[in-house]
Image (cartoon, rainbow, N blue to C red; front, side, top):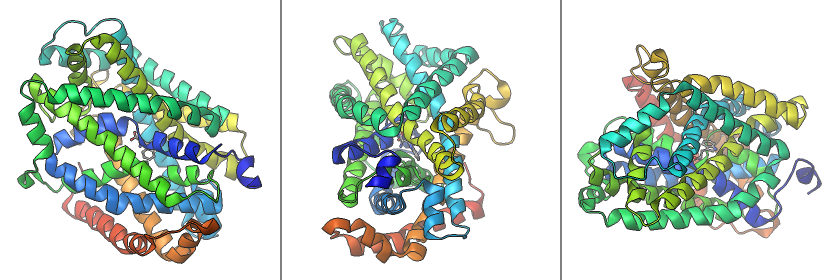
Length: 456
Ligand code: TRP
């Protein structure tokens, strides 16, 4: 496609799937999933999450990809080109803003990952440690403002450099070789963790549902986690879809991405919970959870230091393939709609993200105000995480489902999906989910939260 390749296109079908999977798989699976599962009572939350991924996430992903490929535009342009002169383009704009919002705190946690790589290489975790000690190391590390801000800056610079070179060169290569290695490490770690003494209660917490643990907060959190983990609700998949060829099967690509992403998250839980109960930590330890659980787990493995270093390095790269997709959304918007050069768009958006990210970097002891926001009872990073990572993505997905289901119409979308004779056997199921289940379920959850005021 001439117009697609002028904006940059994937080199191959596999390249696209890898890039989409690379966007989906990241800190959302390995950092965010275990800690929200821990805070929300375990297995019952996991079940609800799985339901949301396949009944709501998968149809939304198919829709985002179809919208992107049809219009070959960034999210704002995509809505504008199918509904010119309407308010729909503000859904795209919400996505552009959300991308910057998510990237701002995601970059902080990605920076911690880089820091833990260096700590592991430096031998910090080479001796046996109590849960108190690993917790103290974590809080000492994140409360150092220079380190936290420096690592955020480093990570944003890395992201910016790759996005500046153009999406396909940067991502396809990294995903192809490195993600399978990460998967392998995760499998080894899971095998180690489930065979630790005292793994039983951890496995029970994670896998045996206790429905009395469900609270009003369970639903928006599980829904937000599903969208966050799959990179949905802000147009990342619209943007990535705009670079796919017409012959590619969007439905099977979406299915594969959802499956892989879920598998990695489930594996991460299988690693974290047995090790967490083994170490006697509290599952509701919040954003620091995996950074406190993993280092002592590495120490129980032969060549644990090497293993741990490899793990944090690969997690850094997994985070990078995700931040690339976050930054690409505002960048492609500025390029397409304002005719900016890629360099200028990258520079301006990353600088803005850096500024917005500083309060999150300072939210763990460096600045008291950001560490416990008055009247909210949360630190700044967690607040950003909930606003952008849960609510904004949920609202964006709701509006997208309404747009595809009613404005563009399922017939138009299905026609795009069935280009070049691709069979879409699940079309009736998809049409039902995108027109009825997705909008109704998401709207009910949002309205319920607003009515009861249980935002956090
Ligand atoms: N899905 C990624 C993760 O799990 C994060 C991410 C990348 C994302 N792009 C996104 C989340 C777009 C929401 C929207 O780590």
